[in-house]
Length: 207
Image: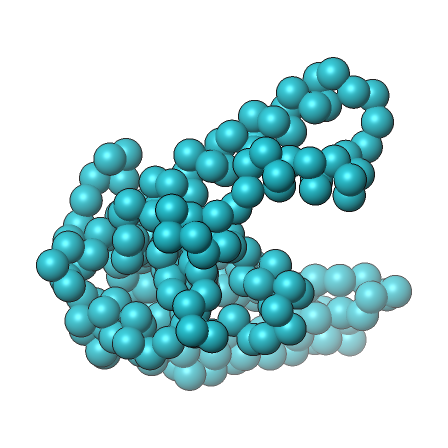
């Protein structure tokens, strides 16, 4: 009898937690985030010419790596990377080194990879400031270079994330018991926007 009462009390507690959590999480719904991702999630191209240059060069580097591993039964060493960099340097037609990862930039330069506000403003002009603020994520640098000690984005990525909460009994004696579990839902979006005449235009993703 005591065990049954304990279970009922436990289930009631879980129900009350779920109700209070749902009431507190009405600021923006998951369905609204999914709708925003459908409209604005994807890639933002600031310079289509440089974007295509990076795409071609990275394919050459990828093909080089594939050939290396087909013909060599050893790891790709730093000396091999230097040879690849000499053959296929990550350099744009303007003579600037490009990056495809903000982590590489921070490691190479010792500086923080920050996107200048004037580029963020272009995305806000398309989305609207209110919709931009609703996004839990911020744009990520996909392709860029540095000029006069300032990052110049070539391509940015905009994605959306939310957490789906499940209520129940989770865990075990070793990890501990919890009444809810969260699943991270990532929505990359499938759009492609190209900056034309200082304004983002939606393009076909496969263009």
